[in-house]
Image (cartoon, rainbow over all chains, first blue to last red; front, side, top):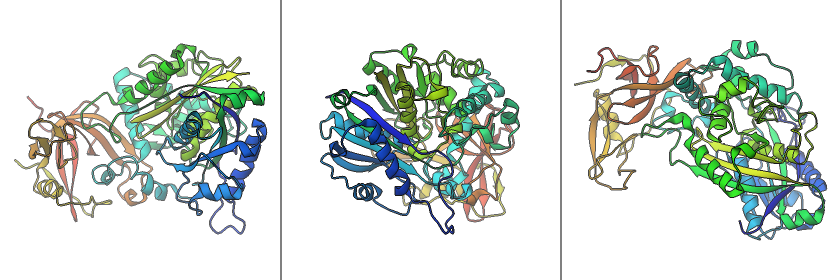
Length: 397
Length: 141
């Protein structure tokens, strides 16, 4: 990196149902949700708005009526920008890419302060219709979509293979959902904050076997704004910040599955991205105090935790059930409640990941605070972890 | 030798597009053969078929017939199906490693176990074919 980059402010809406039915007399409008978050995040940052030089927006879902939403927002907020303004799309890693591009803009000196932000509105789209779109995103339209594969169907196959290869029990996988709900109960922005039992998870109606309702992501809306800046700006501001210590990326050159048979559940892209991120940060996985993983399903958290070296290969589910990845455990994972319970407004999930790390590393996380949290990792992905993007953040008080 | 056919009562829920290049694949499938392409120099197979070898980018390729035999690598049953597939739900889909060393995704018939030997069958929908796999009736040698 050409210069060091930090996060000095952040704000997020509650996750859940924000979108109004099309026939509602009063509509919720995206800019009216997002603009107050920008103002709130900038107030925390404590830097003048004139220093904002870039706006990187996680692309909106097609359900958002206003197109070119980034420049619309720049007008709404009256923000002239000397660095850049763009909307990014990276499938599931869209939010993570928005954060990544904001970092780049600052690191390259194009801006001293950049906003990474987004709003994902989709809850009013019925799931079978929504799936008509997402099925075209995860797989080959002419050779996979023809069979009706949905995004989470691929993760379900990971679960089947994982249980086959390592003898993991259904209850071990399911325990990840219970643990994440426990975390979400302590998170004011979480979509679900009512405790969930292992029995409820195991007896839920099947969605993509073997995964039931509570092991797949809920549909929901959400909005986030992160204030990214050069470290010298953060130092001058004099408030606690989170420093970007390392970054790793890898795409394995496949779209959903490799036609060359491989170990699909090794999540090799996440292994490679993690190695790069740890190398850049000059740390190992054992140095982390927490990790916020992009994991739409229970199995995905297990496999990602193994690929990042947070749990041993084949032991991720057992370690989750034993409490190693819970708050208070050896390495707390998804302290926000994760995709399963914090919620999964997919195009901003990558931003919500960084938001949770920011809350933890600046000791704003309240009852779910990881004591003395200093180093945290965040991941996002696309496909079936065909690509992974990992950031390592450090608390600077 | 032709793959077995299974007649379906309806049209394909989401029919594939056919290009001038991919037409031989769908024509062969209609006749009971599962095919793909191989780089002439590299000798490497790929799936779906491509007008070049993705491993070397050589443009000299040849069509080859696959045995349709393989092992079931993974599977799922999709209960929450996209709108077009609700009529077929719940849908059992899976990933199969063919004996030629190629991995494909497809519909799965019956309930074969993971790692079970499977064989390809052609689903003869009213508008055209799709491929699927079922437990192999004859075990490979």
